[in-house]
Structure formats: C-alpha cells, structure tokens
Image 1 (cartoon, rainbow, N blue to C red):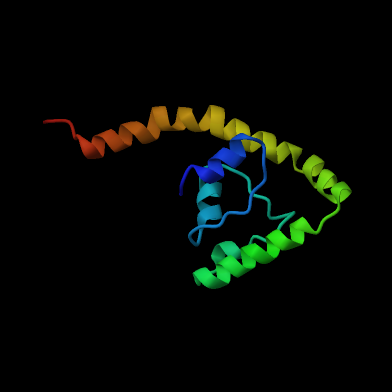
Image 2 (cartoon, rainbow, N blue to C red; image 1 turned 60 degrees about the horizontal axis):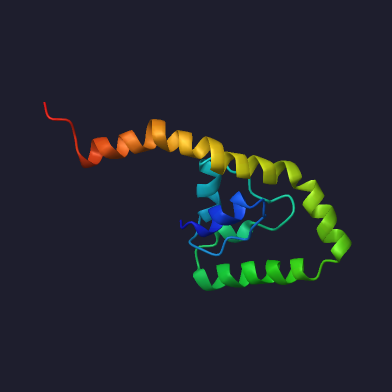
Length: 114
C-alpha cells in the first residue's frame, strides 16, 4: 500500500485501486469504506495481475462512459462515504497510529531493556 489511494480519500474522491491483490481489503481493515455499491470491486480478489489490470481497466472505461448527470448522481450518493473516508484519514487514523501502532512498532524495533 502506498500513499496514492490515501491521497484520493483525503480529497473526497472515490477510487479504483490498481495494485496488489487485496488492496481494497487492507483499506477496509483500516476502517475506510470502499465503493462496491457503485463500482465492481471484484478485481480486488483476482490473483492474476494481468487479469486484475483488465478488470480495473474495464471498470474505468465503464465509468468514463457515464453521463455527467450519472456522475453527479453517484457523487451525491457517495457523499457520506467520501466524508467518512476523509475524516478517517485526517482525524482518526493519525490518532490510531499515535496511540497504538507507533508504540507497537517501537516496541518491536527497540524493545525495552529488562
């Protein structure tokens, strides 16, 4: 996982994630909501990278074919999800890292001397 999907989420954008298998699942595990009710996210479970790319590309082409009104309607329908994701990234995730994940990482990297 890189910063690229997080940048989209921070800017209130839905996304198609072109990456390793399970990338959307990782986002969900961190508390983000994905867009499966509006896009076909079955690509996330495809183990073959070529097939996964073709699935994402097909979904991208399908979305590009929507009318401006259809895109506007989807954006309005996704408003709560987009707000949730931006809040999760900018408010809640930093708190999670500060209070839980960073201390756990430090314990692994520099265990306390006994």
